[in-house]
Length: 285
Picture 1 (cartoon, rainbow, N blue to C red):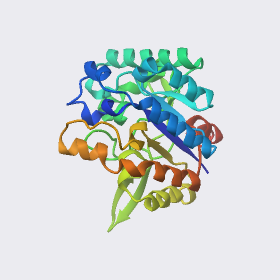
Picture 2: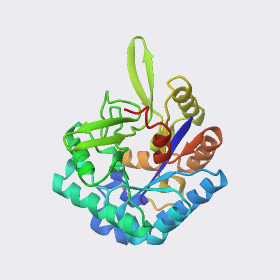
Picture 3: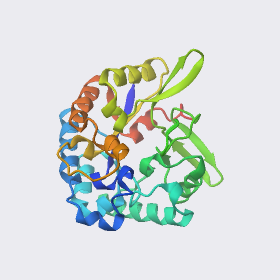
Picture 4: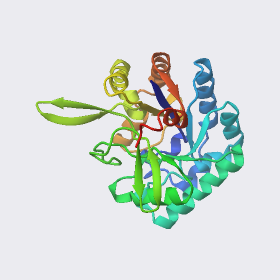
């Protein structure tokens, strides 16, 4: 079973956990570490002969075009993460359209290929912002990976479908690859545990994540999707002064991320989203 490996390319000061403390206008004042960290990831993937999908922030593409060219040169899939990491449900329809158009154009001009796949900042396509799918379709995206089928204070659509499927909207159809969860039943109560990466990768024991992916592959006959960020492999990054919850979410177990990623790379087969979906295109309807 091929699983999807994805990297959300953004810098440590651009994350949603810090948006109360770091203004967009001040981003250029912070020392950037995204290029060096992403190159380390590229070298690790080369070591394991794995290709991935890189969801790249437009701001990063504009400031580091050589990085995008290097990702593309190494035959990874280039995908869009928006331009300036704004949560979709906090902005207008037109602001969202301009954001993705700007980011998509930057990425396509830099790598010389069409960009088809999108992931919202902090998975911010929720029930309140499903309209974003219509705009994605109108702007030429054929694939989305923004829906997290769980309860969460920032993102999530509880009860949403857990595996790749096509979503029909008034403006067309888009392929959705939801973030992976493990569904459990305890005392008759059904709930979902996020096992797909990011903070969950850093918090949960890697054996538990491995067991969840194995269950998804073998028992549910579905691909899993894993994600992480370049800043998550960087325990030496500068510390942002922020609230306790934000600091916990961002800094917990940064020193363990890369070892966990390597363990998963050695345990499962991974490929870019496009390849995973193409291998199963008749299945995901």
